[in-house]
Image (cartoon, rainbow, N blue to C red; front, side):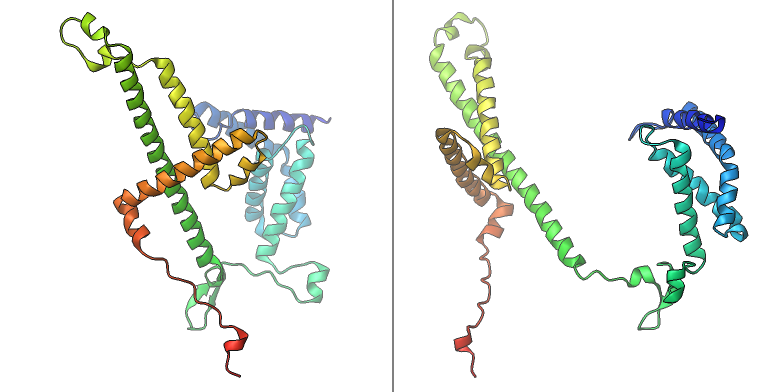
Amino acid sequence: MSKITAALEAAVAIVIENTPADGAAMTNRQRVYGDRAFAGILKLIAPRIRHFIRQYGLVSHWEDAEQCCAIGVHRAIQGYDPTKAQFTTFVNWQLRGELQGLRFRLMTDQRPSAKKVSAATVSLHAVMSNADGEDMTLETMIMDENALELTESGASAHMATLTRTKLIEDYVDHLRDVGTDQLARRARKATPERAREIAGPRLRSSVHPIDPSDLAALEAKIALHREAIERRLSEDAEQDARIDDEAVRERTRQVAKRATAAIAEMADRTPRFAAALSTPVPARPRRESIGSVAL
């Protein structure tokens, strides 16, 4: 390893070390050390940058080429993996790619294959006139025929997911309320003598406390029910068929069936869902058969 290669590896390690993690803010110390190491990297590979600029015929656009090379070095540092290659090799391809892209943006395609077919590189930001005579860029003229359909389907899927999550949350809260009431009634029946032992003001929670183990068992049961419901109402419904125990599979199916009926009833009682459920879905128009077509 040459001295320049070793110096590049050390400088790149400093830049990577002072790069903040995702979502973290860069400190002043990291900024100073990172900028200093990055400037050292550009100084070490300056002869290589000058060579590539001349090789790609961008001497007349020297400043733009140097900026592209700086961007290439920055991208090379971001994607560098020391276990796969040395930085001096990895950065060469980044510099070549940036300069090649700059040459295509500034000039026509210089490759022999492109000259044979008179190919030219056109920027999407180039201003052209549309059919109405208005000046527009090529980027704004590109129309995606499936954009509206994909947007509507994505919005519908998102709304369906939010609605399903809200209904499941309401059903889980309903199960928790019902289960807590049952445990409270059981506690009142199991401890009638505790009310006589407490003197002074008596609170219901102190007279008839619920056993924490019963609450934990209730939450575990609710979690199992919720998992079964989410599988049934999502795309993982086939996962129930892969359960080996037939009794568990049947119990899961019954739980999901009762939960689905209860959720439908809750949605019917909710004002924001009742209007949508009461509106009949328009039937699809039937295709006319060949026999009904007048020939």
